[in-house]
Length: 192
Image (cartoon, rainbow, N blue to C red; front, side, top):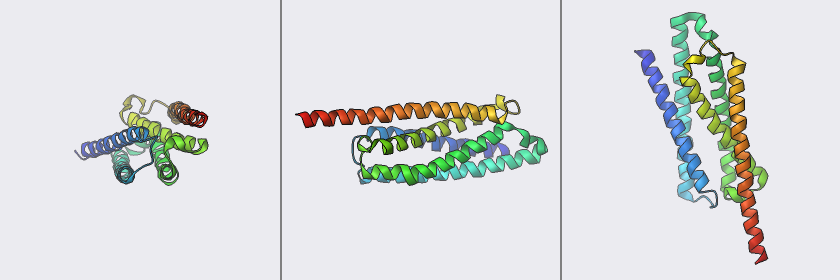
């Protein structure tokens, strides 16, 4: 019963965080051409708090699940390479989240996304891509039971790397295109 409740809490925390991240990314994209107003900044602060609490709940419930697995199955439980890949992905996700809030979001206080310098726009887009790919892959690992005790750690991390690189490539292309559109509009305005 305890394991079922821990898994349920872990699932709820994942759903809350992933849902809020998806929603925030959608809103940020719709706000890409405007300076953030007070309500939008408050929304981002609230999102940061919700996702941080959900991430703490994930770490807590995850560590308790590992402890329970160890107590039930012994050291064999700790041989599951997918488990350690998931811990690595969540650790990277935690670091990326801190960078996103310390480096990425402050950029949006300076100017709308599309008006940021190319390097700042790219940095923000890549941090966002790593966040989204990390959350999606961590959630996937939670349901990838067929990978338990089967795939080596490096295979799982390789799959994560490919997924993250694809997300970063798309983010880079979108950030570049967003800036190009604004530069083109600026050139047309200057020519008029």
